[in-house]
Length: 215
Image (cartoon, rainbow, N blue to C red; front, side, top):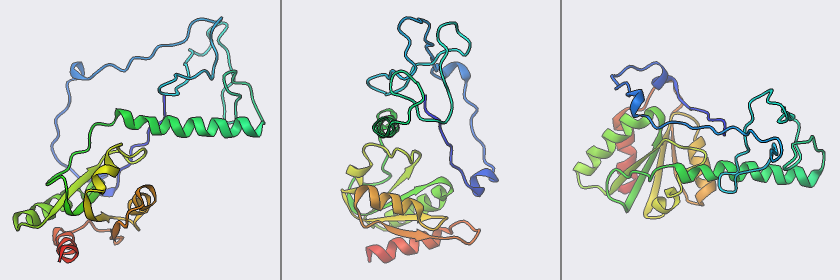
């Protein structure tokens, strides 16, 4: 019951590679339980674990309620201009999004679970980072790699993984947005490695930076 934004970039959007079409019968069902009792329905009553609100099919007699962008009163869903209520609802929404981390599977570390350098990437940097890290590992360098698929919230185990490495390198095809978030979230001196030239990373560029940092 939370909007999801799927981030991509030009090289993923315009690239081509084979991929397996999943068997729909193998996918887990997404079950939605709609409210149906007018006596107990409260538009902003929240599940104590997920903080999600109940859904009611529009037009269901007795379950009519207000929707829209104005702030609502906790539980009742009435329009509210109360400052304390607004602060409470903002906090609900923050905790609701953070709680999604419970559903994110454990983060996979490519390489040793601890060491000298951890490279963190996302999106279309996958191929260049992986090849560069594998080449450096083949030469005996202490470097591992994490490829993030969830950015907000971050995986719940990411902070623990980061703390097991002396240095963190984040190659990005932008001005360093992920590095900024990682530094702010985990108070780690993550090293941004940005490229904003309309071109993807070459493997040798990332490999050269890895060797420079490890020394």
